[in-house]
Image (cartoon, rainbow, N blue to C red; front, side, top):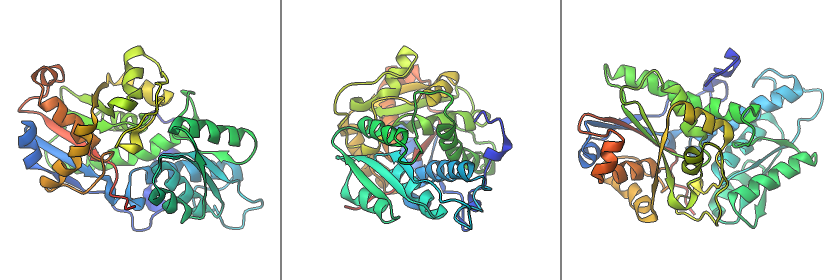
Length: 348
């Protein structure tokens, strides 16, 4: 990321004493199916909290609390501070809210998480297990974003968003800098593979923050054609729309998709700027492609995940089956593809 301070290059062991990089798996069966040379999968299901959002929401939440309290991130938080820490507030489809709730618990304060009604009770219960309050919003994720922002404006707490219309939003930048840990791990892991470097990254997007962090963090690792492909459901393709028109555009509708963590209607402005700088492209996939991707991953000896977690694979198989799209994205038998499985199974 384009940091102005080395303070943002943080060590996850500051939060998790048993921190280990998540695995990078090679799946030859999927490479053969997609007719590419090699295919690698980064397994974020093995991250604390079971998904990649643990990095962004926890880092941004603790850093924001540190700014308010004048504390050293993260060590002084929750220990003999002169004044109580504010409540953390956020909107979520589940995973970002879980990370923000965990950050609040780590710091000894409270959290309030605004969830759209389509979020499963199992995801809500995981958030509540950290002592957070869940507020249900009868609407979309974007409606929850608006409700959380209004609550913060009313003085009810400190907003920890993972999306914004402000391209210079400090906290959203912190969230993406949290995700950058994944890219740093990947650089080390590919170096351990010798001369292997990915030529294509297919990465799912809700508002685009993960894709942006990977585009920046893997810039020097990737080889030609250095293709960043953002994958989204057809019903919630807000990043694809933003890339097409050059700025975030709110897409209408209920945004319903089996890839529930990707049901977002407006791309994040700072994420979009980064993706534009890296000439990122977008591909949209239908519900059948999303629903079959987790099984295809398991049949190839990959990790168990959801439609959201396997959306990058859905995008790859969509491209691989279409000769025109293969040519457009320079995907061929010499390509080395990287996918990110963003979450594990949430039961319930």
